[in-house]
Image (cartoon, rainbow, N blue to C red):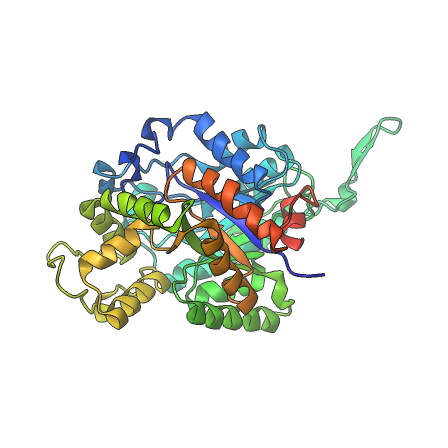
Length: 430
């Protein structure tokens, strides 16, 4: 059986391009309305996507002065979307740094039952310093401490999910026995960060175990993904580097006692689709012209752990700030940005444009065939098992992808034409 790509849509406000709300293709006033999100999820389902993916942020960004990026609560949003979809997976972000395991386990178990087995948890450790002050902390925990807590957090959540055996619910009216207590197990966890008795308040997941996504590409993030993740969301700009990353992660997965294919590696991609190459380039130029340099600078300051770029001239070479990156900041993406800027001798302004169009992910501009050629090359080289699609604008950018790119992927035998299962786990194993 030939491999099939896996696709998820990254849903953020009215798109990931900085200041895309200024485009006539979007309506920023809809970004807090249910109909907007329902439309995106339904488009993803019409395209047979594995998942509708909702990220999160735990702090207010001054960049909102120029960029209409509002952040609804992922669990509440996905629960609502579950009612108007039937097959597409529902992946939400929840931080292991600013939550507790019992609450997260219960929230995702509830979503999973409401959606009949379509929930997925995107595990993050939160590397943004400003989030700490919203949760009673004076400082962001160190990188190593965040991941140590995150590892234990995930183990507790998974233990709670597995507390009920698959046949614990008896529901025998004649005997009056609803659940067999011998098949519901206390957790009794006693660790450095958490003490959780359990058991869970809900039966076992309809899909057996709720899938986990992991987005950290540092060595510690990759180690966590290798041990527990079902999909890895990564930022890659170069196919050769992406293949090296994929090979490294697959080797780590194997070393963790799992099959290398157990973790689907999905780089982010921002496709700009046109009926002709010229039309696609014109759209990319238009969206790029709307990018607010102030907004993107604010994004970069956050991404780089608080480094202030406002003192640099935009048309000067991108500064070599490798020695200035805070030790407890996110590691992989800043390293990618710096390395690329230095290797390609980019100015700060050029980096702002590149980062601003796809919130730091790789953009591909062209016709549907151009974009499929690119995706196929990455897929067949082993650099990707599929992609997280981050539309520059929503919902139109996703509609263009579903109507133009997906049929060509299907015609080439690279992607499913219909869902073969009902749960997110089945989609990922397809």
